[in-house]
Length: 372
Image (cartoon, rainbow, N blue to C red; front, side, top):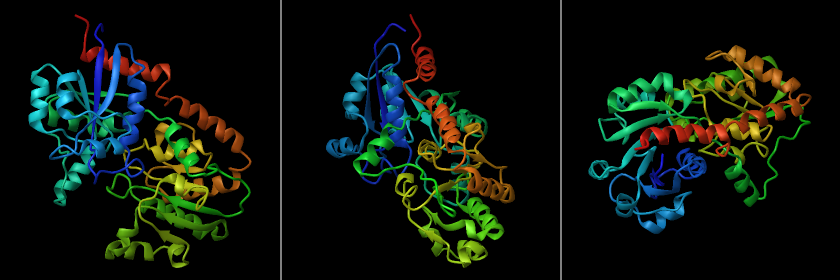
């Protein structure tokens, strides 16, 4: 690839869009840019507003973006590649960009098939239902390739390619330093405060199975569980069916559980919780996992792509999950040094600056812009 590429990452930068810690898109954009600017032949990487409807105010968009922002008109004239990240640019803009020779890629970072199926089944609004468009390629993380890759291919008519997920502790460390937090696991407690921080926007990642898991563990050894914080769940407590569900749990009846609005991991782990309990259905790559591992916090999970990190249990098996949680309670402190070492080795493989990660994105850029 001989040319010097100018790349834009399209993000929803409207005032109502999720912020840095409300969703994954802004962090994903920052990590993606860290890798792209290290790729051979890349001159620059900026952001442009992919909010639905009219373009957001430039000053407001810049304040919300992790990357320098340029307007859509300037992007049309100056960029060679635009990567939509969890947003959809206006169709007329996309058509004009493609007609002038620009390359448009969609980077998908969610369980699209599940989310879109639920939106259609329950008449929920969505702005990201795939449609034949002007994409040269669709990029997906490994966790989503098998379940969602064919759905994206046949609904967009674009080829789907797996790209590595990227993560760095830089954003987390900058945030906790700015807030004056000493953010790491502290051994020594005989009972643990637990946290469940699933987004609860889809059945692909919800608090239901982790609640069952924690309840089984509590019924077995109640003295080992001091409390449970459930994030992004306060609105669910108003629902009759959810109330019937949680009222069946001993850990709830004994007033050990608190339900909160959305709350980031750094605001919970350490100050309110000692361990993170998670469950995903075909969505096993989570920044929350990486944050917990980076801090040395026990992670009880069912994510196969984490390898030997954390304490893994069988899918949809609260009995096995309870056993993993209780094992962690009894052994984590003694094994903390080895736990940290294994986590550090795994997280280093996600580093946007690492040679394998950069090489993987260079390969995709070379396919989009072959030498002539």
